[in-house]
Image (cartoon, rainbow, N blue to C red; front, side, top):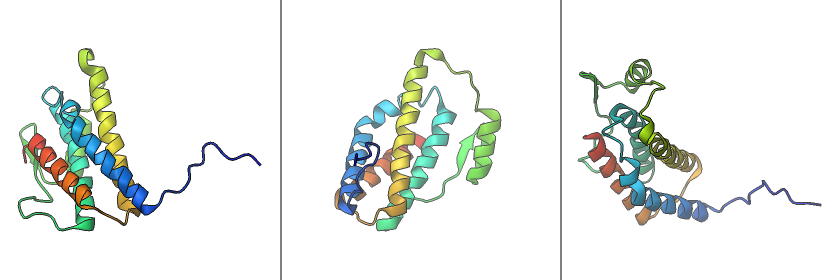
Length: 155
């Protein structure tokens, strides 16, 4: 009987933790390259990084308490309007800024950055669902990522 090449063996909880720690380290190493075009595509990055920030906060809250200097909910300023409701901001973003026309000079780099953000966000969501272990390194990396996200988003 042949083994299925697409079937991956089930990872142990500690292996899942190790993979997420490696992903957080990798994300921190590449963060400056990921947000390289944040000024050019400010609203686009604000949208995606705010969603990522929420996932980081949820994962931190799963294993520890948040530092007092980190607020869970922040208002987002866009087009001169302050949005406290993420759904309202998402709707505004879709209506006003989700345009197909982007500057082609940096389009490839932009797509790569957004792919890295989405990839990391997916790993966080997966670990939120079934991750049960944490480590000091994971929590430290998540807090570093949260500080960088807050700085980028100017929270």
